[in-house]
Length: 142
Image (cartoon, rainbow, N blue to C red; front, side, top):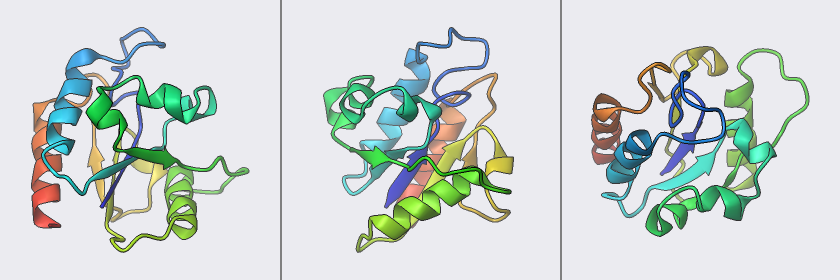
């Protein structure tokens, strides 16, 4: 199962410095993901356009960084639901035996209605309630 992860508004609150992730948001995410050995992470954040994959991995603990399998492609101008289109493009290129996925983002408008999404409040970031929602989803798809 794959987790498509945005950074801004999720791991970096809207009030936080632009170049740094919030440690408590990162910790909440890591604790939720690392309890499921088959969960893999794909970065959807625009940070992927500035940092190489190894640099993105170093923003996290080594154990979590090893779970980051890639980044979504940068697509030309997409009408409607651009991040959803990036997720679909990634899935089309990287076929896996487990097609289940969920996105973690602060903007529902980036995804088609009904898409699997944990919607994060950008003011509070990935808090304990978000982590619990992710844990529940991961447990249900096992």
